[in-house]
Image (tube, rainbow, N blue to C red; front, side):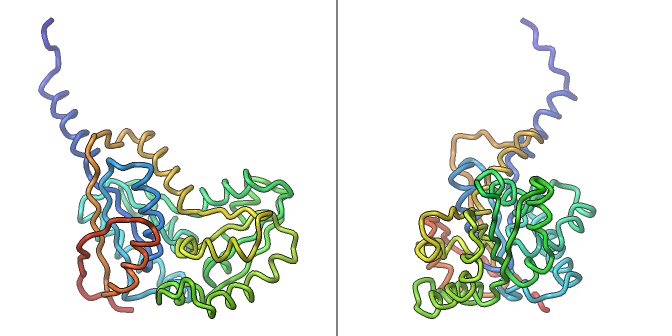
Amino acid sequence: MQNTTSPEDAQTIIQNLRLNERPIGVFDSGIGGLTVVAALRHLLPSEGIFYVGDTARVPYGGKSQKTIERYSMEISQLLLSENAKMVIVACNTSSALALDHLRDRLAVPVLGVIQPGASAAVSTSKNKRIGVIGTRATIASKAYNQAIQAICLEAEVFDKECPLLVPLIEEGMLKDEITNMTLQRYLGPLLEKDIDTLVLGCTHYPLLRKAIARLVGPNITLVDSAHYCALSVREALLKQGVSNEGLSVGKLRVALTDATEGFLRVAEKELDLKIGEVELLGSYEN
């Protein structure tokens, strides 16, 4: 049978293949977004990933919306300079305050972590009394409250800002008594609200999942937004037709804006994630 593929069609096929092989760009204010990377590696092992942790300016949680938009755009442009085919905002604060800003300005799909987490919370909760913990900026934005109630109007959302958790996690104090005491203080008011579902509204927080689970008990389901974000990425890649169906394991590149090698290795162990050599990026200032 004669091959009827035109040169133009062949060129399009080649371009699509090259697009599929481009990496997924992922960023967070620090190391916590590696929870999303770990979920992506498990779900989409053939995809290349370029992760940037803005460790020079962590945490984002206490910054203004304008500053968070600027930081998020700077890191997103860096990801695009490395040919990212999609940008994943693996930071709840940036997802709450900068997602629309990025979507209006970037030429690739941009996904956040809040909508997937909100959808999962509504699906999981039986009594529709849902707790959310996050950074000060995420909680103040009411992004989870709005996303959850847009799906289920009768849902009641009880939120609590937890500004000390990210610094404790970044310091590697995952099993420290100070961290346990901090969790007790933050979660106590939520436990009094008869919630049956708790959204870990910061991608750092799954690193404290075991400690949180012990504290809240077996009757409260924890929703890890990182896992549900990875599911939404898989769906988006298939919808856009840019999923990499290769048989080999995709390359993972990790870059930081400031050195935090010690805790990086703690996260690597906790997440069972092989990171390898870490790139240190140029100067990023507040």
